[in-house]
Image (cartoon, rainbow, N blue to C red; front, side):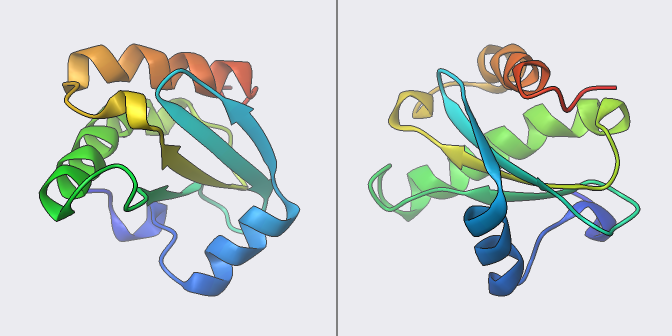
Length: 112
């Protein structure tokens, strides 16, 4: 579980990032990110109903969360990031997803 200080929770926060943010595509995920006034980086995870039923969506969220936790210390501060799952991530495990998410963060220039 991501600590409270690293989470985007409110709908207005998600809406702001979607409206103002830039995007970066990866194989399994899409990153939408924008500058913020927060001291820490804040991360939200979005999994559409197109991905599957609730069991599949929750599993996907857990996999993404576990893949992101080790790199939190390396991320640039003052950013809000939404990680949107793509259909290709279904059925994958953390060791398969983690390097690809890291590469997407590098591509978006969000790693220090």
